Length: 292
Image (cartoon, rainbow, N blue to C red):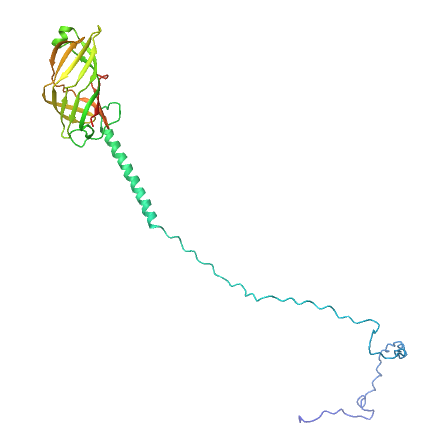
């Protein structure tokens, strides 16, 4: 079929639209009745009637016009720049003081040295088994004798139980043992241990049990070699010229030549005071003061 051909409705004798020939006619098409609406109300045309009034160019002439009050302008003042942001300043770490560190180290070293000295002193003290006389201990010797003993000394106190009964004078006078006191003896002690005991001014006295006064007046001198060890003095006699005159109630009864006594004695030496005690007589002592 030609694509340009137009479609046309076929025509018949009954009209433009009807059944084909030889067919009964189409029944009439029935439609439902249309709804009837009431007629709309008719309003007369309205026209606004204005009263006849002359035109006035000034409305509300009877009231004066008042303009709204003007708002006062406030000057904003000088320009203020906005605050600038400032970054926080970093805090430098504290610097260690080298002098302080050195001071702390020095203090620690001093403490260690002090503890070491105490330990050494305690150890030396523990090794000394020799009993020490009452009083302050003397300084440690560096030579044969204690350095504290070096010098010249004078006897200012003396007390001892003196046995005279075994001497010729004591036997004749029945003197027995007498507690004698006194002083005056002088000692000169050198650093090498050599010493001189001078009895030129030594005088002791006491009483017998029956009340008689016995006086011992010494003379002469004795040379010694001394050695100190553990607060004890050891004597080694060299040569002696010492002697003692015994008198009873003021009357001379005889002279006794003295022999050196080599018994060791305990001692203490503090500053200008030197004291000796006896190992056999707890009440015996001698006190010497330094001669200046």
